[in-house]
Length: 282
Length: 296
Image (cartoon, rainbow over all chains, first blue to last red; front, side, top):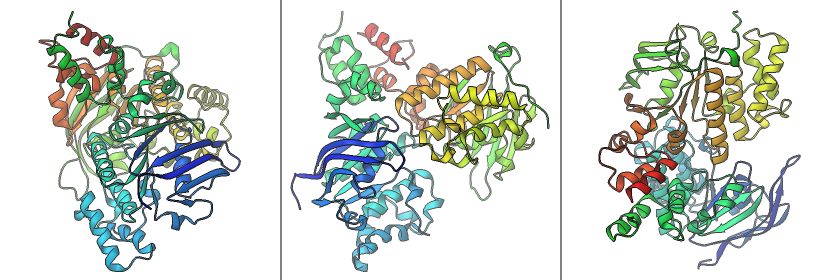
């Protein structure tokens, strides 16, 4: 299936953990192929549950989740894995092999691919994420940022159409976070659909075509980052904060009525242009 | 075992009547088989009631430094160590870690790794039990800290049944209930949303002010540190490359770039607009609004 139709279709999806709270409470959402969708929300808003509903680890108790045309209630996780790959928040939850190359080969081999194809896929993902120097190393001996890259690579090696990232930059420094943003942009340029769950609003501002804000298991805002981040009231009620530069841009009287900015360079460019044209000076 | 008296509000050490509570001098650490020093000669003081942010790239030495402050390195994690770490007069590198634990509380970035008891209440009480705190006082202190940290009503839950954010707060409660002179937190807001991050810092500020606890926080959220920290320490390749107020440290944009540390967005905007002759750059949101109003 190709084209720009929705690759993920959620209709009135509801999930409640056994003996637990309703974590996802009536979510309807289409994710268009090739889009990067950021999912924001406070702890407990239902983001990670949503991620597990997208790849069939959890099945909706009501409503439907359709991935690449497959209803997750009617297909096994390994069938869905060809379409949706989920990278967990803690890479150790998914890594197990003795070496990085074994880790990366496991997924494609499990899909029943012949050895030459497995090797090609591993080579492609190794080149993309620059893992050449650690192939014989145990994933558990790597520093945390590279261990995360191995976890990502092990999912990418299955070449899913949709990649779901659960908090890909938690605990990462500035350089590693920028690297993750670069990888998401590259994947998007190659036509991959990415769902990125994060508390890092700077990351979501930098990579997302659309942002979905969740609160108490529901979607409370959805739209372009500029639109969503301009709505301080809804964000505040959902317990999240737009990037500092976005809030600064919205608070400046000389920018009153202008759209939200998403990055430092954007605001600097605008303010510098206003200065040089004399606008904004007393 | 000695009973460590709790410090109540009346005894709080505010200001600096007694000098530094923690003194680090020329601290050098090298792990076995490592080619370079994890810490290459670190010196600083920490004063009662201070909230200090520790920043730097992954691998800069932040976690090693944190683990030296209560002796985990080199006592439990072997390493060649030179120099000294003194907390409330005790030599942290040689005093047994279980005794240092009464002086230096530490919360790791993976709270689940330090939770071991059957219930939340037992988990929080554990540190007090090992200090032989009388039962009635123990119950009162456990209840008090659970309320302050927003986990009241969860006393009977198994710790590992809590959400990640709740486990983080529970690990913090376990450290705080002991009322240590120094509290070290390794990325306490990791994985928390903006509101929860602010709540953690509200609590830390309250603990610093009320109990006089000196607090070191390893944190990547530089905007939050600029608003909340009294001082910032910047580590780069095992060396302390900058120490000062958030304005002094984050305002030196080129030095931060050299250390791989991001500066707050508002500081980056002001720096890119050319700064201000002879003036410092804003590092907090409100300062930036004023700065931009003045700069035109």
